[in-house]
Image (cartoon, rainbow, N blue to C red; front, side):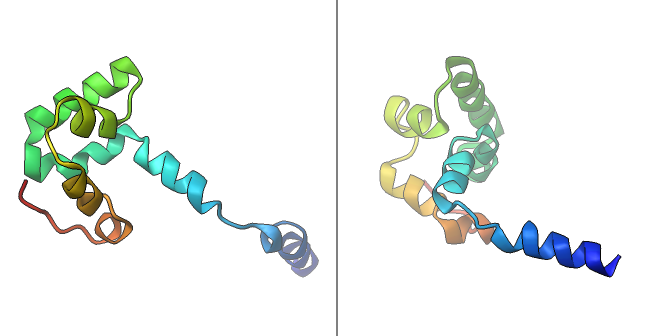
Length: 93
C-alpha cells in the first residue's frame, strides 16, 4: 500500500497543475453564475436571462451586459471578480 501511494504521488499527483485561464473561462461561461445576480436583479429576471443564454448559446455576460443592459460592465466586473465569487458581497445596481 505504501508503494502504491508513493507511486501515485510521484507519477500522477506531483505533475498536476491548474490551468487558471481555462478554469476562469469555465466559470464565467457557466449558466450557474446567474445565482450571483439574484439579489440584485431578482429571481424572475435571472431565470429569464439564464434561459435566454442557454437557449441561444450565449454567455450570461453577453445577455445581461451587452444585449439587455441590465448591469453596466463596471458592476459586472465588481460582482464577478474572484474575491467576490469566493466571499460574496451583494451590490446594488
